[in-house]
Length: 270
Image (cartoon, rainbow, N blue to C red; front, side):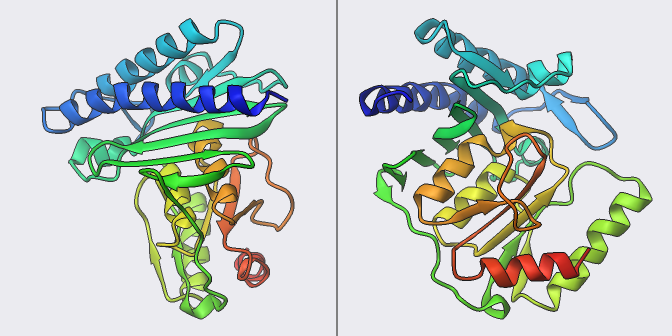
């Protein structure tokens, strides 16, 4: 395990990289977008690619021995292999559909895993100027102020966030809308922000109480946010209630008080 000095260096480097990419996002946000399609509704823009290049170049120069997993490079090569080596896991623009539509829930997400454990996290929304940060064992912060998850203990008073994902086949849609219908009877209301990384940060700062997502893109969606939730006193776990696996494309997060009731509701919604 790297020492704390180097962890704070890693965080500073990740913030620097996120801010550089954030400038590109901010510029592009107010301009005409050139959009490609990865799938029927899964979008990628020139900005996604440019931001990934900026982040990787910056971090590779500083840490040439570290490994890198990025959404755009991985989408192109189709492989994700997470080892115990220090690994930077990057989503250069999380919320690309929001970006294309000019909806301000857009962020850069950078996570560092060491021994496969999310250890440093940076999630930066340059449009709303919110910088979420966390180091394992050192707390989580929004623009330098400490974060705490909510203390809501009742499911019926909890605000839930999820996403519908990019699959549009009937069986996937039916499964996700049936689950949402069931959960709507159990919680106060449901939100969809269009950014998995920001969903996790909203849990960390107590704006939202519950989050789950099944079948998201890959570890780049959750590597940064998972550290931030845990360091804000929250829990990150598999929707079944088992331990979270960063490579599984399944995640749930909440404060500790509603976890058991939430897992039970998720199981009943299957």
